[in-house]
Structures are given as structure tokens and as C-alpha cells.
Image (cartoon, rainbow, N blue to C red; front, side, top):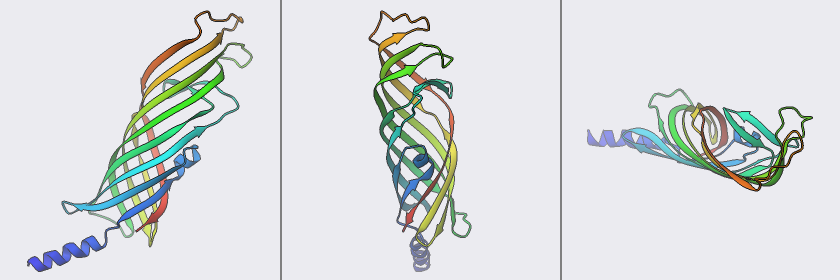
Length: 211
């Protein structure tokens, strides 16, 4: 009996992939090119994995300004910095042919910044209010996703959806500021420190090599 169980365990392990090297198409399209590595292993008769994704975020827009996004006033334009995400996945024992389902908690971190930039702050484009500012932003992003991997020999497509909770700490330095009437602020330069927490959906498609 022991030999049979051992043989079954070995047969099951032989079907387990070793690693998955990939890129996330959604992040790539959002100007955050990433490379990910996922390592698989067995634990309590279930396939598990840990993974790490690293990338670099860079955004550019000719219409640099301040917009409302997920309840947070954010600057758009030149905004860059390193990005990393660490996750753990637990796979279901029930699987369809060439599909593996999983659920996964993860934690992402970002350090974003930009140098002195002209920011239009008027509600209408013709208004003359503006400020010149720089910014550093540290972001922690807890997230939870469910997903499914489809494999075909050494090709793998990973589809996932979930929720994330970005926690942003932002330090903004304002060097020059002018209101709609053309009056210069006498308080410059000054610093603004803010902390925001938002809830946002997350989805992605990873493509890569699996072995």
C-alpha cells in the first residue's frame, strides 16, 4: 500500500510545472512593462506557488494636469518609478483539461515620482490658474484575485480578476502657484503631504513560458 501511494504521489508531482516566466499585457498597455516569475510546489496535496513581478511605471501626457480618479485628486503626466508585486497562489484540485484554477492574495509596492512640472489647476481650460510642482508617491497595494491558467505545451495564458486597495502616501512640493485672477501665492514654496485609500477592480492577462 505504501508503495502504491508513493507511486501515485510521484505521478501527481510529475504533472506539476516547475516555473512560469511571463509578462502582464494589461500592465504593459498601461505603460508599466513587467516581468514575472512564478514557482510551483506541492503542499498538503495541493499545488501552490509563490511569485514576484517587477516592472517600471512611466506615464507621459501632453495635457499635464490634475484629475479625479477613484475619489483621489491625482496628477497626470510624467510619472515614473519602480514597481514590484509579491503573491501566493493556492490551486484547486479540481481542474479541466489544460486549465488550472486558483485564488491568490498579493501585495504590490510602488515608488513613483516626477520632477518640476507645470500643472493646470483650473476647472476650465481657459482659466489661468496653475502651479509648478514635484511629487514623490509611495504606494502599498494589497490585492486578492481569482484566476485560471491555460497551458499548451510550454505556452501559458493566465487570466485573473479581483479587487485591490491602493494605500498612497504622497509628498507634493509646490514651487509656484497662481490663481484664476493672476495673483501669485505668497506661501510658495510649500509642501503638501496626503494619505489616501481607495478600492479598485483589477484584471489581467499574463502570457509566458511554463515548464
